[in-house]
Image (cartoon, rainbow, N blue to C red; front, side, top):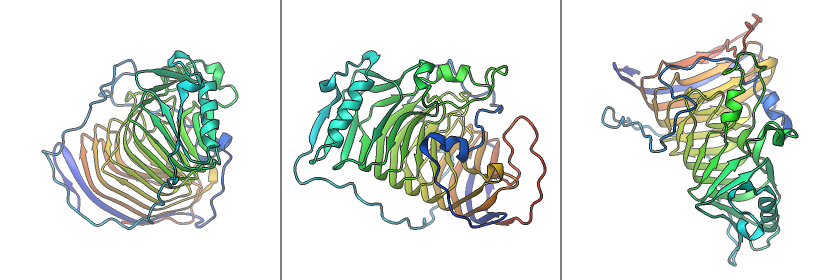
Length: 402
C-alpha cells in the first residue's frame, strides 16, 4: 500500500525479487586502482539538477535536519536478520596512544602527509593496539595517502580536528581515483566527531557537467575502505568530496553510524555512501545531503541495512546501476527502513543497464517518508547515463516481483 499526500509520501514497499537476464554469476574482484572504471560507468556525465538545490558556492549549514516528524508517523515492520557483526577486539593491556603531532604534523594548512604516514606505521606495528589521535582545533592538509594493513592489533583513529584534501590536482597524478584509503585492515574504528573535507570545489568546476567544453573524467573518492573486516565508522562529518564521499569496497562486517555527509546539491557525482562488493553492513542514523545518490549499493553487495537515514538534497537511495558494459552484477538482501527523503530528484530506485546479467533480489524498502520528491519510486531496466543514446539490445527475459 502506498499513501500519497499533497506534500509528502509514506512508502511501505517490499520488493521481493528483481532479476535481469543471464542470472547467477560470480563476483569478480577489481583492483583498487581500477575499481571505479569497472564497477560504474563513466560517472561524470551530464545530469540535470533541480533549481531548488544549493549552489556550489553557497555556505553549508551542517545543522540541517528536515522536520517531517510532525507530518507523518512511521508504521513498524520487522526487519530481516543480518548476521551478527563481529566485535572489534580489544587488547588486554592499554593500547598505545599515537598523536600525529608527535610525528611532526602541524595542523596549520601545510602538508602533513608524511607525519600521518609515520604515525600510521607506528600504530600498525604496535602489539598492544593503538589509538591514533588527530587533535581538535587544527586543520591537517593531506595529499593522497593509503593507510595499509594488515596491522598487528586493533586500531582506533580518533579524528577530533579537520583533515582537508590538497587542492593541487598534480598531487593526484599517480592515482586520480582516491584521496584517503584504508586498505586490508581488520578491527579498526574511525571516529571522533571531527571533519574530513574533500576540498572538492576545484574538481567540481572542472567537471564536464559544470563546464560542457571539458572532457568527462573521474575525480577522487574522499574516503575509501578497501578489503577491511570488522570496521566501525562513527560520529564524523564528511563534506565536499571531490566525487564520492565514502566508499566501502570488498569489506565484511561494517557499521557506519551517526555520519553527517554534505555537499551542495549541484556538486557533480558526489554520492554520499557507496557500497560495492561488501557484505554484512549497517548504515545507521546518517544525514546525507549531496549532489548525487545519498546511498548507492552496487554489485557484490549482500546483507545491507540502511536504517534511520535522512536524505536530501540528492538523487535518493539507489540499488545500482548494475550491468553496465554487458557485465554481470548481483545484489541481495537489502533493507532500507525508516528513511526520510526531502527535496530529492528520486526516492528509492533500482537501475539496470540493457545487456547486463545477474540479479537484484530480496530488496525491501519500508517506512519511507518523502517530501517534495520528484520521482518517489523508480525501477528502470533500461538505465542509460551517457550523452549518446544507448543502443537497443536484445533481452531474453526480465522477472520483476513486487
